[in-house]
Image (cartoon, rainbow, N blue to C red; front, side, top):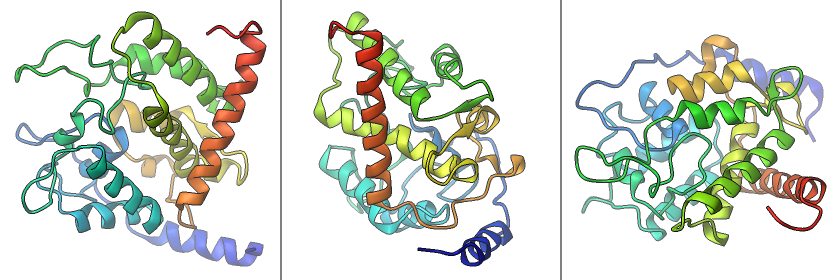
Length: 259
């Protein structure tokens, strides 16, 4: 276990790295449904074009924000196994992440379900554009100090999953997609909430506004990557905590078992 001197030494190292410049995507750049991946591209941590991202560029980009190599590798392997399109050279684009029922899923915090979305210029469902109304629903679940916490994320998952089940007859929130959506919540709290609680991570709304609304890592607001890598085990523990809180809320809000 790290003592305080070691922790603050690591924190100072993380703070010392230069902040990668943010640039809005250009007209020929592509983006996908994941705000964090889009943010990495906007900061140049992966190719800014969002196209032809080599596996090593993807891994290196995530590791630059202190994503553990095992977690980053699990993302990469999972994307391939779940059917995200890859080029012959094994590269992929952020637009490839739009393919429905791969890592893209219904009941997103900030994107429309494929079934409920409009059709884009290429004839595909627009499951990748930011939806302010959905994100505002997540924001409304912040605590009295304007932070999102495990309860906020669990409540949002219940809310979004109920909406999808009620309005989308093709909803895909089964076991596989459930793992993904709860993992996203855990990663949001762990990467961006570590400064505000080592155990019970919570994220200020100005951080999440930066990530979701502007697809910008909140360096300018005081954020730095976590001083220790977020590993697969850490992410899994966070996911379990969200699911446990979701179960608790379900029993409170829906005592008869309905959602």
